[in-house]
Amino acid sequence: MATLPTCFREALTNIQPAADEKNAAEAHAEVSTVLTGDDKLKALGISPVLIGSYAREVSIRRVKDVDVFGRLTAADDTLAPGRAMDLFESALDAEYGDRVERQHRSFKVDFPDYDLSVDAVPARPCGEHWEIPNRPNERARWVETYPTKLNELTSAANKTFTLNKSGIYVPTVKLVRQVRRTWVADQPGGFFFEIMTYWAFQNEQPHEASHAAYLTVILETIAEMLPVVAADGLIDPTLTGKMISTKATAADFTVATKRIGEAATLARKALDEEDACQAAVHWRKLLGKTSDGTHVFPLPEYCNADGSQRASSTRVTDGVVAGAATVPAGSDRFA
Image (cartoon, rainbow, N blue to C red; front, top):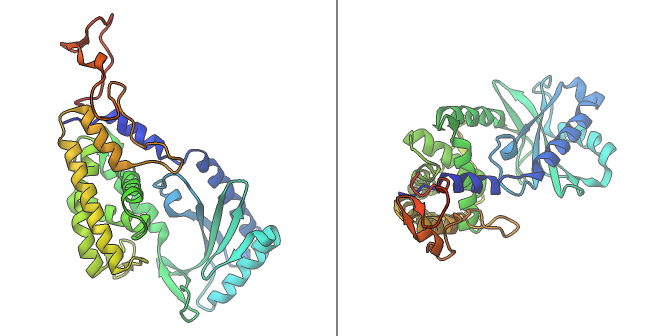
């Protein structure tokens, strides 16, 4: 079994948002400052917080939008969603002008220099959780949500599931998101797969010895889950009795089920492969490429692109390459 831990660590680095992280943080901070500086929003207890995949540290290249959850902590049930939207629009428009786009439940603020945008959504208290404006084509009302709870659940899962004393849940979510991006053309989206990953960890309680094994087990579990959630829906872990919404159609689920089944089969083949170079080629196919066309999974330096070993790597006696002056560093081949 060739689990290639060094290659997996590099793969995770390759899908890390990199420069987007600094830009996203600056854009989020700027929009939050504009909101908290508005007198009318101050009177409603404005307290913005970062949510979304970027906040949970599960985003992968590239970060195209950042979500700001505009909590109005002092608002009561007399605050109408339209009024909240108008207040947000007034504050943001005064600062950003035509860079602001009013959407059905939030405001999109463009940051062209960063090639990303910030989505700011108003929220009012609802017991222990929150409410935000409803989706389009519905009557004006508030709907329940609890995105800050998902932040907490993500952190807790990353502390519970570990590999070499480091959290493995978040890295696995990122790898699953990359697999979905590679193997599923459109829907279900990355967030839907993130929630399936959460339930896969909760239900299976995996304790594996490598990134490779965790990813394989979770992909196999998701492959089994897909036809079930297509029929019954996906439970929202943050709100009792609620389901996760998706744009995916029945046809989308049929395609996704087939494709993720194929991906899970490939992952198992890679995990069971004894030859490190052959395994690396399988992992490379599974994880695909980044948005700039770079292969996510690197091949070990002793491997050719077709999965064969380079000639200099085959002349090995007791771990020492013939003619080498010193013993080579660990290759990860059977780590």
